[in-house]
Image (spheres, helix red, strand yellow):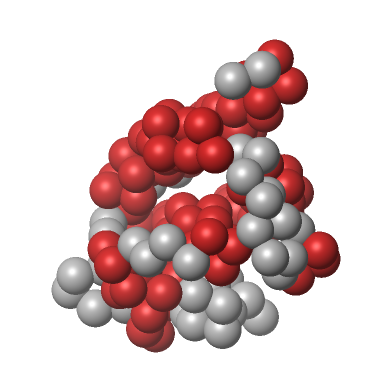
Amino acid sequence: MNQRQENLFQQLQHYRSELLQILDQLTDETANIIPTDFHNNIRWNMGHLYLDQYLWIEALTKDKHKELDHFTNWFGFGTSPDHFDEKTPSFEALKMLLAQQPEQLKEQYGHRLMEVFPPIEMGMQTIEQVLLRTIFHEGMHVQAILTIHRILNES
């Protein structure tokens, strides 16, 4: 892996660490509250972030992640906590998955970052391009988590 690619994984780890620091300030109870006028809670945002990186890689590479089938039902686009069931990962389980994900992505895909695939949405053709897109997406959901947390603290 070259320095640019190492830097990408350092950024993934850095931004994920910032998210985990925010989540460490929350409780399971807080993470499961849906504020008025919101469709999702903090726990849903956590699961969605975990799922999103794998879904984009899957869309590009066509590599299937069978363990994510249920994640799509719980945390996929257009879902809400109404789709949760007794098997939905808990707040603590999601924190653990989120903490492990950057290193898992590096192990699974670090050697394939520049492999070229047929283009998908936004012309993305490499795993590197997909991961760059997911950093932006993660920032949007971190803001959603911060907003929900602020609203819950104010009420």
